[in-house]
Length: 219
Image (cartoon, rainbow, N blue to C red; front, side, top):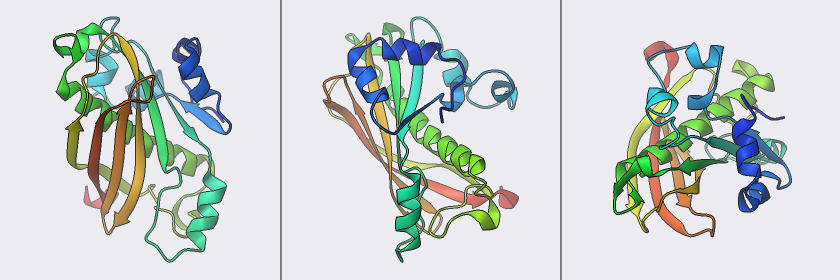
């Protein structure tokens, strides 16, 4: 079940063998990151997603991006129901492919460190988008959310902290993959691990992050 706007970006990455290997793996579901959705989804709020939808959406910055995840929802639902551990997410890991061009450089042919942090934050935000959509499509709202799964339908989540470690320069032009993975929940806190790698699997940056959840009526 693909969650795509335009398929142009997907086709672009499928033309690259190493990206195609990721996207064609078993049980992979592609999706369009929230900042690149079109039509009604794009105009729902003119105060959000402007950095990646407009400022960084150009031929010399980040002209294309696409996300994907492995569908393991049945397995996670079964594990969550049988475990006394704190609630977890239905989709526990997603990845986003970003096509980086020289317009994102900060120094000496490499991507700006602040841009790298933004890519990481964008991937985490996409993870919550995917979880919301999967829950909605599956009719998992309110009392219908499986035991042990975080009900995102009545929550607002936002970044509370990011500890980013820059390990290797990210040279442009080139494609990177940013993978955001759920770690655990503690009360209102949701802990994440994010890694940015290149086509050879070399880890260029890593982040430990904390998101906070808050009931919608209190936002």
